[in-house]
Length: 314
Image 1 (cartoon, rainbow, N blue to C red):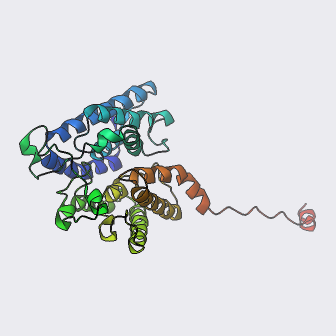
Image 2: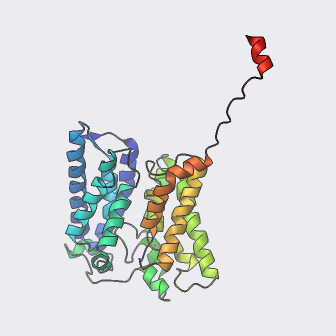
Image 3: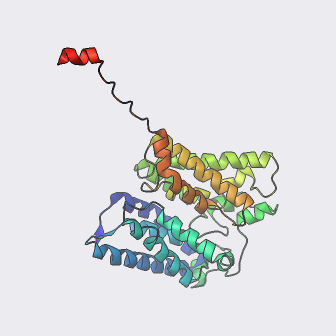
């Protein structure tokens, strides 16, 4: 049924610990949401690929998992369903399927639901207790809770250890910095992810956050927490590294990552959206091919032989 894609399979392996940890934090609702997203993602791709007489790619498993892990824990099931259908249909299949998409499908779906249903998703944050899976379907605490980024922007303090371990409110898969770093190490060791894309994205976000911090911009997240809050690390490791929508040239990859990081911080600091990473990746996708062209050296046209030399040869 599936096309065998070892690279995509390794990404799936790296995401499983994040999924298990999120179930521990928020309860079995996360598992149900993920199962729904996986089922619909596979179904949509199956319908389209069947008409092309092709198999479903294992890349759709990555798209579905990334999309599910990028949602708030209490996201309504109908929004999750709409988002993944849009992600696979509009973000991938309309371009011709795997390998032809311009935009990262998971980012397309995430951006679509955050723009379309901002009020509903803004109330879907949930404070974990660390024993969510023991409290049943709804999770440990179904009350809306401010994310660490919202708290820091309001001038409040955040416990560093809980932030690093992931015991805090946030999107399902973005919370544990430790698990994301372990996943990054696995993907880099197995040569699944491109280190330039990860490093340049984090550098772009980190440098701009530091500049905002030292210039005293009140809406900016303190520089020491900038890369540990929101989804910047999650996006840098799993979405900015998408080989299909990212540039191919090494120099272009540096530019691409910096653009994602910088746009993400600009949006999270000055716009009405609580996070800007989806916009960052989307903008990066738009200009990815242009970045490749910018760094490609044009071949000089061959010099025509002088008339005398040409006559001598003849």
